[in-house]
Image (tube, rainbow, N blue to C red):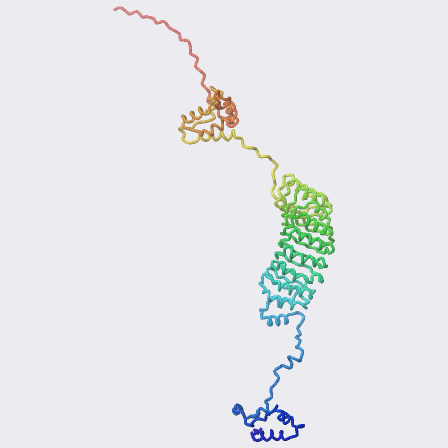
Length: 530
């Protein structure tokens, strides 16, 4: 294209100015002082420009600039991305947008029924992408996030997902440390959808955190299998639970073990409402320091109850009697665990004796670490030999033998100690203490302690003065005029004959009878005379 010269441009400007003002807008503006045609000289900065399709004078010939997308961004609606309902592509897109690493196990699990991420160490920031990907998923029924730390933000996104996704029926959040703040955001939509299983064990919910769950149950939330163990729940939580299940008692499996429900007021109220259930199958109340008794009669009357765990509590004799008398009303009870409770032998005997009744349907009776007596062992053997108890299992703790321990005889101890001290050692100085007292009783009825000490010292077997005084106190003789003690030798000898009946003094030889001497007269012999 030929370039336009400066003279041509100048002529055009003046030509325009000579046109009528009604036609020439520039002339009208020039007269008003709003337009200046300039000198007509080209600026030196345009000289180095290429002499190609771009005209040199940019006042009249501008290059064509393409729209980089401004009009589309401002005027057109944003393009909507469409993803399959399984959520795999959506999950990858969200991870790329959030700049988090995708979890391969989760990505694969989107096409199955179970997503197992326990002990995986899931990043709490990545839970948002997982929750959005699961929103419209219709395959996954169980999500296991055991031992993954979940922040309050992660619990919020899981709660939002549960509000839209009705396919997920089992949620395992054990050891996730969600605490009260997390449970508040998690259970927002529980009242509008049922759950088959919810595991919130080891999460330190406390009474405040449990209150949020109780409110959802009160509004109509249905959770068939609920695990709330290790959550520091006290009797206040039991009262809140009682108010929640008063009109919505649809839980079949309930685990409240390892909590602090020791007060009778809240626990009795809770168990009273729970006893009205028509679907309760399994109840675990172990490790709660329970001291309940009379309410057990109502609890055992639940027709559907099959497993009852009351181990590691403080159930007393009255509770054992209540349980024994109520077993016949427990029509479906299969397993009863009473282990580690302060029962005694007669209490355990009373419970096991009820199994003779064929109407009692109990199969497993666990009483580990419960001390029993021989009467219980005999009763247990006879019960297990019954034809309708062939599959029955009964456990127990230590067997207490029915005997009384005899107290130690101090007389025997002191005499054996003296016998040991005097009869052992070098053979040269050995002395038999039994024979010593047997010899003394021949000449004395009583003996002073100092005399015994002196005799032992002379024999080369000195005894401790306290030992001899102890013997004197056990076998006291009459006191001396000055108040001194004496030893009753008759009592000592009697005890010696009981301890060592074979020790006796050697027989004393009979004295020889002197025969009368016969005096024979001497016969003098006559000397022969020489």
